[in-house]
Image (tube, rainbow, N blue to C red; front, side, top):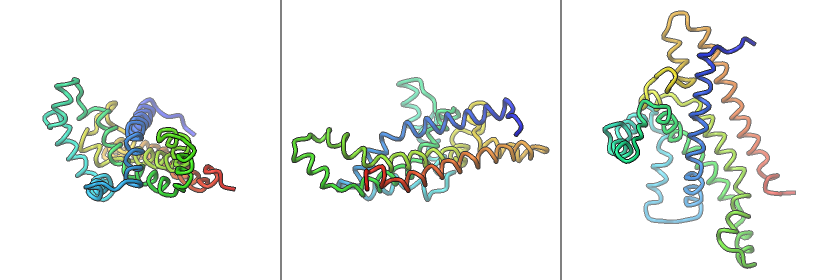
Length: 231
């Protein structure tokens, strides 16, 4: 196998950094929302679920445009972030991480929610009867039993983040060394005469990473019963 060029390594490293930050930033929120959706009834729950899952059905370009309107330099949230913290997300790699997080978030929430719903709540009630507080029950029973879903959702979201294109290019553009992730680099190479060979190399890398993510998610799903301590 040929060694990767500096440009290819830069694209690969940026893609991994963007996806890692996207998953790490969204995971705590995803766990909280998944538990709320699985265990609680509250006013506006259906609307909240619709908003969370909306990126799954919206064209990614639409999602990216909404992010640009909200988080762009002159957007209501973007302007507030800049005035308060001097942070600019549009046309920055951090904005690419935000776009990836938004697109992968529904998959993460869905996987965790299904795992939480599968937990036998009698175990939690038994622990409460024995004197365990809510926090102890959550960290010693609920969270460990939901761990397979959390890991599966994390892997799925990571894979989705690696493949994100539409929302990213709309929100942060395609800037070499700053926002050009694997999908954007492949697109740019297909527009350049003679770029097919390099594009195919990046396609192979992208396919391999995505396949690893899918296989990891399948493995975690198949072993969920073992993780829960089933005989």
